[in-house]
Amino acid sequence: MGIFEVVSIGIVTAILVLLLKDKQPVIAYLIIVVTVLYIFVFLITYIKEILHLVTYLGEEANIQSFYIKTILQIIGIAYVAEIGSNIVKDAGLESVAIKIELVGKIFILILAVPIFKSLIETIIGLFPIN
Amino acid sequence: MVGDTSILFQIAGIGIIVAMIHTVLKQMGKEEFAQFVSLVGFIIVLLFVINSISDLFQQIRAVFFFSG
Image (tube, rainbow over all chains, first blue to last red; front, side):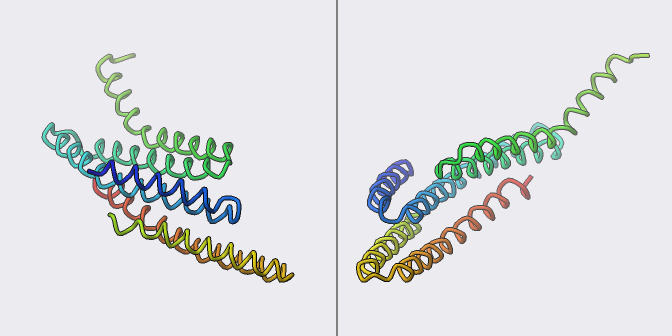
């Protein structure tokens, strides 16, 4: 079971960070970063299976691969932005973390523009306005 | 996946050793050497972390951005 592994890594990290925090705060912070990265790497193997399911369902339902690709990229941007903002927030830089999330949201919006455009075109095609 | 956790103990070990050397050098009155040892320890640990970050980013790229 993966959950026991993650929980025990968290506990071990907490102990090691407590050990090092007042002597070498920077190295303690890097231990936290390594733990965050480890947990996200751990997670990505499971996310991969879910994404295979999503692409399989999309192919079965004959959805254009462009849409599925856009959705996958949006999830990827959200994932990376989450990692970055978590790591920066651990260092105590709340404001930079908020900016990273903002950039992630704007990039997601930019990726969603073509889909939104095709939606608008479909609606205009349904109700011809002259 | 379990093998990767040894990096945590490696980093913690480097941290403890660097802290120890730092304290000893400070007691001997060599402040600048103590700072230098701290810096070198930090750089060594940073190398581990950068490897791990690039590993994660490559995996994310392989999963999310080229498989659609």
